[in-house]
Image (cartoon, rainbow, N blue to C red):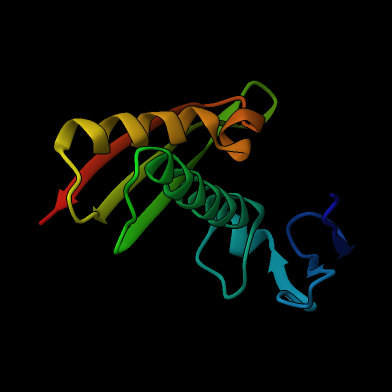
Length: 141
């Protein structure tokens, strides 16, 4: 299975701009620029897209881990926060923090924590990232 996206960039780094599109059409010529990446401009940026991918992947991986334990989540809410820092002559992503809140009928705290930790290490996006991944977990009643 392969998934694709494309980017088009025009101009220099600070005053230029570009668009990002996905083959599925979910993103279609979505604007990105220096200001959307390093300031608060309107549009998206690569780090936001990595965060979305990681949150979605982790949530699905947790659902799979729960199924192996005979559990089904009523809801899984994950927020991924990607850290972008200046590093040497450029930038790096040293860390991603996942904040999880889930409702899982019949789950013990231990079963929840085990499934969440397994999802954190087993999610394909986690495996792809060369970053420290931290996880806060909250099981709601």
